[in-house]
Length: 280
Image (cartoon, rainbow, N blue to C red; front, side, top):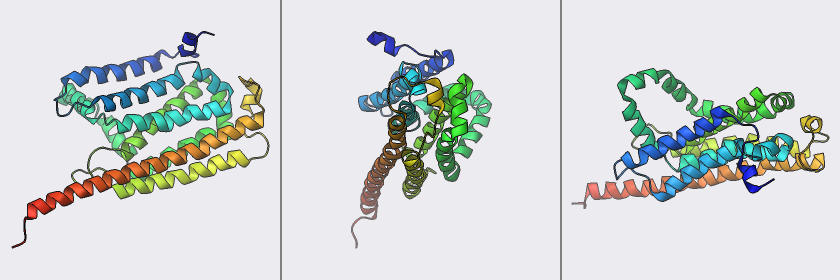
C-alpha cells in the first residue's frame, strides 16, 4: 500500500469527516476576526490543529483498521481520543474562538442552545466529570461490552465518539484557562485532586489486564489480528498502554496546574503589594 493509502479512511464516516472539517473551518474563520489582544499565537494555533488532526487520524485513516484488529493499537487509539488529543486542544485555549461564535449566533441562537448549556454545566460538575471519565474507560473495556463494540459498527463509532467527547469535557475542566480567583472556574487544588483520583483506577485497570492469565479480550482471536503477534504480547502491550501513559499524563497535568497556580499567586501577590503601597 502507498503512503497516501494509509491516510485514506478504512471505514469512511461522512459525519466524522464533516465534523472535523466544521471544527477546523469555524476555528480558521474566527481567527482573523478576533481582536488583536484575543488572537492566539502561532504556538496555540499549532497545538489546537495538532490535537484535532491526531483525533481525526486515529478515526479516519488506516490507523483505524489496525485498532480494530490489534488490542494494543486500539488502546493507543483511545489514549489519543481520550487523553492526548483533548489535552492539546484544551491547552491551546480556544476560548476566544468560542466566545466569538457565541456572539455571532446572537440571543436567539443562544436560546436554542440553552439545553446544551445546561447539560454541559451538569457534566462539568467535578464528581460527575471524574466518574464519567473513568467510568467510560471501564465500561468499554468490560469484556462482554468490548466484544460487542468491536463487532458492531454502530457501537464501535459510539464508543470512539463517546471517548473523544468525554475527553474534551474532562480536560477542558482541568485546563480551563480562566482564573479561579476572578471567575467561577474550578480551583487549582480541586483540579489537582481530580487528576490524582482518576489516575488510580486507570492504573488498577491496566495492571489487571497486564497480569491477567488467559485472554481477557478474545474478540481479537475471533476476528484475527492484523499482525502475527502472540495474543499474550498484544494483551500485555494493551494493558501497559492503559496503565502507564494515562498516569504520566495525570502527573504532567498536575505539574502544569501547579505552574499556573504559582504564576497566578505571584501575580496577585505583586498586585496586592502595589495596591497596598508602602507602610506609613
